[in-house]
Length: 148
Image (cartoon, rainbow, N blue to C red; front, side):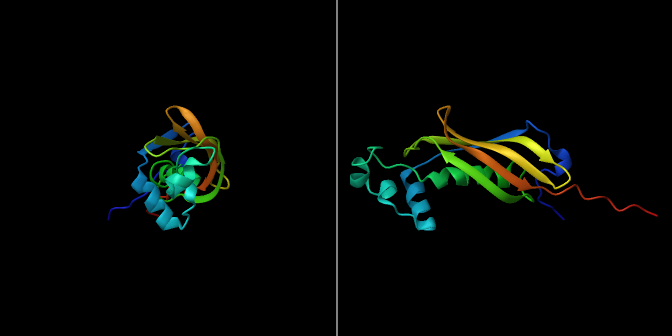
C-alpha cells in the first residue's frame, strides 16, 4: 500500500526551508474571487481599481496566504501535518502577472507538543509582500512493531 506522508517530526530541523512559486494571472484572480466569494472591485473591476491608491487591480491578499498553505500542505512539513495557526502581515500588493514565491522556513520545533513554527514569507521579485508565522502539528514517525 502506498502511503502519502510528508516529513515526520524526527526528520525536521530548524533552518529547513521549502518554496512554491506561481505567476498569478487574471483568470487565477477571478477563480479565487468565485471560490471565496470575495469579489471586491479592487480585485475584479479595472475601472474602480484605477481610482484607488494602487491604480490597478491587485491580487487578493489571501491568495498569497493560500500559496503559504500550498508549501505547508505539500512540501514542508507536507502531507500529514495539521495547520494550527497562521499570522500574516500584508506589506505590498501583488499585481496581475506577478510571480509570487511563498517560502516556509522552520524557526522552532517543540518535540513534546509536536509543534513546528515556520517563518512564512511571500516575495515578488525578491521583495517581501507578505510575512508571518505558521504553526503546524506534525506526526512522530510510527514505531515498527517488534517481535517479542
